[in-house]
Length: 108
Image 1 (tube, rainbow, N blue to C red):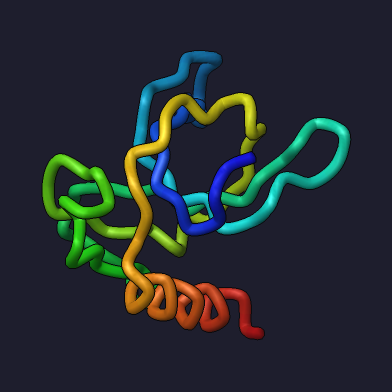
Image 2: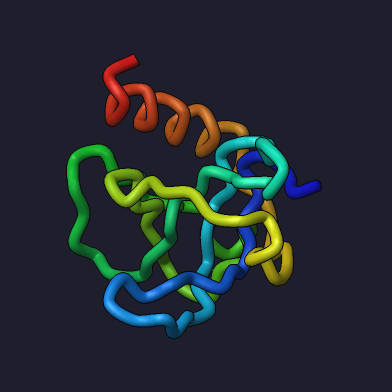
C-alpha cells in the first residue's frame, strides 16, 4: 500500500491521448474501492504556481531531482497500479502545509 504523503513516480495519462508519461506525484489518500483508486497531487518543476500550490522546499529529501511544486490545483485520482516507484516522503512541515492547501482548495 502506498504511503499517504509519499512521493512516487507514476504513469500519468495525457488528457488528449492514450499515451502516458512518467511523472512524480504525491499520494494524498489511501486506496479506495475494488480498483484501488488513490487521490494524487501532481508535482512539477515549473515555477508558475497557483495560490493553492505548494513549494516543496525539501525537494531533494523527497527524492525529487530539482526544485518542485505540488500542483494542488491539479488534484486528481488514478489507479494505485499506475504507481511505479517510491521516491521519498515529505517533511512533517510540508505535509502540514499541503494539508492546509488541500483544505483551502476543497473549501473544507
